Image (cartoon, rainbow, N blue to C red; front, side, top):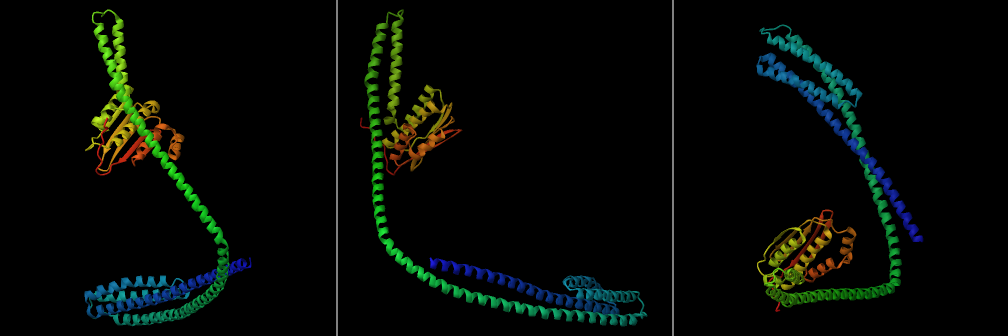
Length: 465
């Protein structure tokens, strides 16, 4: 308890010290940045002042050159420099907006520069008058020199002021920098001390944890043993589940075999007997055309033969073993559409070689169950059947536009597979083949999609019967 309290106190002190140092460092950095900005600003004002003096001097030289030589190039150069003077004066004024004393100097400088420019303009105009020895030129030159001296006096005063500001701001920058170094040093020393303190606390805590780990070692071993037993139980449950799946697959296979046997018996025995009875009754009916009982019996036998063939086909389509899945599925789909009145749009591809017998039976049962569910439950007038082949798998898709499967039923099937025999049986058939069984349903209908992989070298195994 004492160790935890000490650790908390150390943590609070460390956080408080860091916050105080952070505030001091932040404030010092701000002052340092501001001092640096002011120093940079002073240098910039000095540059503006130099540009102003340079522009005035250049204009004066160009004016004097024109007055002495009358060269038009010198006149153009003078005009360009005179036009540039207001720009540099404005830059100088903008750079000294934070100093009222310098602003007064700018006012004086602008007035003197304007006076000197007026003298220059008069001198230039006198030169452009064309007189060989114009009067008044020397007098204007003397006045310009007087004004120039006053301008120099003002600029010197501005330079002294900026030099004074530069010295003050440089000193402030140095002080802030030294203070920042001091604060960082104090922070570093405090951090080292706090690290040492925390090291001692952590060392004591580690010793306490080692003791606690020794005490908990026995409990950990017991937990490991319990977990091992739980894994063993889980493995047994998984083995039981796999066995149940294999049993379910075996039952489905036995049911298919029984259906095939019953289908063959219906077709080969009862179907043949009914056909023979029909031929015998037709021969007896000759000469008794007026007796309707014979024709009714023949019609009943025709209906019995058709029903027998339908039941035999539903139990196991006779063409599945002989002509393969694609042809059998096409025949079944056409017959189902005629019997049910369902508008069935189907596109069934023909594989390059026969599929394995188990794959064909599973796909046909999925097709059969899906169409039966559409007819019984979906309340759909149309459906779509697609069978696609690929080098490594085959895909069967059955889609309707009915009312769909209720959401609770679909969720129960996806979570536990207990929503009904039909969907569960289809999924077990496909899962036994290593395939994927997908069901999507909503307000726009239901889609059953089956993907069965094909291993290289698989071939169709025909039924020996």
